Image (cartoon, rainbow, N blue to C red; front, side):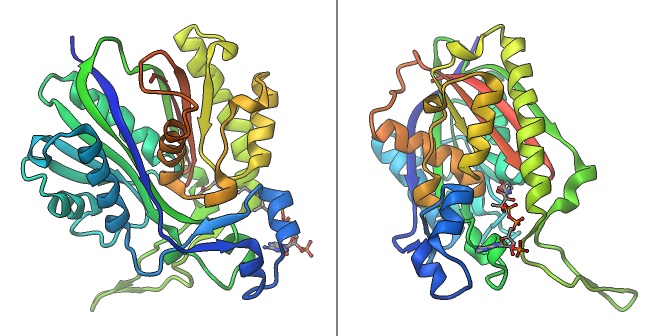
Length: 325
Ligand code: ACO
């Protein structure tokens, strides 16, 4: 039996930091409103770096830290909804940038659940026994798709990337239990990237192509559906919520994390948080938090830590994996 193991973590963010006060100079908002409703203080915003630049930086760090060669990588999956281009995929661009000539590569689109969905996929690829080593990255340059004239969404998001190196060297299952969900019937509450039809045969034009969000509906979705999903995954694993060392949830809003902790009866300090420095980075938020937590010595990759990873967002998509890290 082959078990996947996360052997390295890494992250990368654009250098430019934009504070709430900086935003208040370019739109009608203020630090008090943003911080009290979201827990966000700063975000990193691209000054030219594209999604594949951040993702390739993460991939290169993973290789360097593991002292493995690029040609030993079997696959690269990039979870993103802000690709440089639809074709080639961001993952294909990363493959070329790092010279992973033997890797197949593709993007996975599941918005803020993207990293959790991609990790689940990668674990199955390694369990098949056909592959030895893969890279999974969540990367977004969200600033590209934001409507900068809409203060209700423009203050929430940031750019960044995080990722993991997975190898088939585990001595225990990486994923203890998982539950991935989608409800496309509620998809319109988080929209971006609509494409027009303009052909000799038909014309369909959409008013807006940048991000739009029904904030209240998404908040309600996050605090109603997501804790149920976490509870169901814990039940499947026959693990109590207290046995989990840390909860790494999508970093959308600290008030959502407060409510989750309450609903699960878990002390709030187990819900790690870094959205104050990065904002909501969509598919990048969980691997960014994972990598930063290892860097800060909160936990190591010794296989002894039980972690809940939960994503939720556009699609609507949501899902949990409980992992041995
Ligand atoms: N600065 C100042 N005032 C603002 C701002 C701003 N940036 N944005 C909105 N307001 C105003 C509104 O105009 C409104 O004013 P009004 O009462 O005079 O009309 C008032 O603030 C309240 O607006 P609401 O939208 O009702 O504010 P709410 O308390 O619901 O908070 C928020 C908004 C923070 C977006 C909240 O709904 C939320 O967190 N939703 C969840 C979003 C989320 O988690 N998304 C992530 C998942 S999806 C993904 O990650 C891609």
